[in-house]
Image (cartoon, rainbow, N blue to C red; front, top):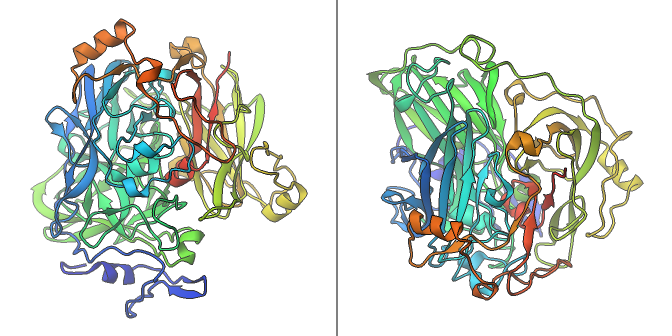
Length: 630
């Protein structure tokens, strides 16, 4: 694809042929070679010429004491459009504008991270839905945040609980022990009711844990590309306004200020730029990919369908590289890739693309496949010349191979469903047919191996993420969903509903793809299936902290200025400093029968959460607490 190709021409080049009818209006995706036809029901980004911007290189941050500050700033998403408001994490002079720096840490070496909220308003304030659980009117001017280390083995008070809100002018201390092997984690906002808007606006960053095998240095024991040949890629998709600013809305059917249910973008971003280009040396590269979108599962591949290798996913390395031409990646998942550009001659190009169609609700109103992320252009440099390793575990100076799947002693059924209510849009997403304020939570025991049967009664895929723990995918089984629903009618929301899927299988269980066979913390649960995972819930002795400990709802301290030094923060924490109950009255109105929080925001929290990583779904109300009890 040459320079000068428009966004609509890019869309015409994608393999999409969906015709949708919604509210009497015809909205058809554009088939290859036809004239531009766009749905009048959805917002569309302006023309962006692809491959104008160089792929941004993300700053790196390390050390045993780190400060990250959430800020409002300005960012230009494309060369031809001006800077516009966005959110970012900054650490001193590092980062800012959009996204956050990549944090590098080492297995077994703890760090103390001071997280500060210095937000002065929100670029997507008008899109906040004040009817969602925990929301309050002043959030538009004073948006809360809650930093979560996704995939981290983290004590509950440092996990970024969605109800442990850090308001502007406040800070919280996070202790990350890194009691896990090398892995690609990521940190992002997790504040109740506005996670989707905070993350979409830019509160995202990579977090790489290294160990003695995967050092991140050239000459590492695994023989992997490193340093300039190891590149994190934060993949997103967005809709932009005519001026090139972020648009938090996707359709005219939903009023401004109302939760939408999941917006599919029409433009791809990598590391904060629209359709960028990277000049690559002739050799092997390691790409650390995270799907940081709000709503889309992608089928990622290169435009020439060349072979590449998946060497790891969420929680670490696979036993050996898996050769693929494409793989599916759901929101929240991370994949570790090796890509060989040795044969890419100088000046030749290849694109990273997607061909997975949007989910049905988006397709119905005219959304089409977002087909493109970035382009790689060959140059004359000689790159990393080492070959693809034959194995990654079990050899000399390598970790042991992945253990066989453990036999569960508990089998637990949980459900993913969507009901209707009197609102626009009428959908409400639930787990177990419950709302977040329920006390009827899952309570697995420490040291127990469980099998979770995750029943998805909707037609769409939902990536399910469990905080704290890692798990293995046993398999996915198609279901006779309609028969299941007829036999077990779903009650009114608020009544737990977890009927067994046994007897409703529509075929044999399908094993996980080889590239998703390792340790995971997020699993794609396809529509109309039961997805079975095997989870071992660790003990307090193994973790070095009590996973069922209670902790204060209040953040650990209040900043005395826009940026408070780590020394003062540490002193505040060590002396028990913090806010009094009257210092913040921010927890909100709630609805759907959810209990309101008292105005003093006193009380304590306990445990972790599990949720759908389609962020609109998480915010309303596909997220539940759970506890790991002694």
